[in-house]
Amino acid sequence: MNISPPPANLCRVKRELEDGYELDDDPGRVELDVVCEFLSVEAYWSKGRPRELIEKTFHEATRVVGLYAPDGPMVGYCRANSDEVVFAYLCDVFVLAEHRGRGLGKELVREMVDGSPLKDLRWLLGTADAHDMYRELGFRKPSFRIMERPGSKFADDPPSE
Ligand SMILES: CC(C)(COP(=O)(O)OP(=O)(O)OC[C@H]1O[C@@H](n2cnc3c(N)ncnc32)[C@H](O)[C@@H]1OP(=O)(O)O)[C@@H](O)C(=O)NCCC(=O)NCCS
Image (cartoon, rainbow, N blue to C red):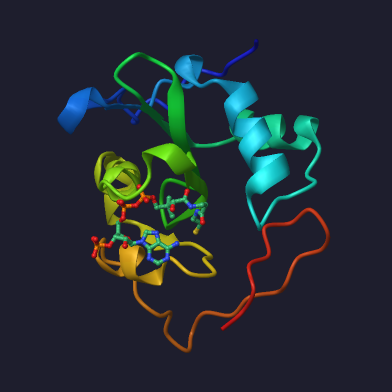
């Protein structure tokens, strides 16, 4: 697999969580089968997205963070795209069902938004139902100055409020 080196100002981070879980932003550790399976089959925002397009989003991400279970397999993921000056867009956040409800999703997102030099940028995301989790991490309703142009079939296009 051809993985681009990280942007120079993004350091590699590995962080241990309770119960032996681990967060790691090394793209070389990401299990693309897990990511592609979840995003193409289960995720409400990307169901049906072809594998090659999911792989493209992974390869072109500014930063990815993986969540790993104590025995090693990847059980969660998120990615961000950023110009590294003004904005960062968070997407494809998931924790596999059997690992949910123990604070791992919040730590995964916390690591992404607070754990790198991107932390001071304007972060944007779309969500259908996890507003409370994101609110706890500093996200809020956008101001009237933000507008969106809805996407087409394979664009990340969460339902508007
Ligand atoms: C959303 C998701 C990543 C959360 O992962 P998780 O490990 O279960 O989350 P946590 O245990 O860290 O929960 C953090 C908080 O957010 C709340 N929360 C999590 N997911 C939520 C959801 N879908 N709707 C409403 N609240 C949610 C939890 O109740 C919890 O609240 P608390 O801190 O008051 O207890 C996970 O449920 C998931 O992968 N869902 C399917 C994919 C998805 O919807 N991704 C998000 C797209 S924006």
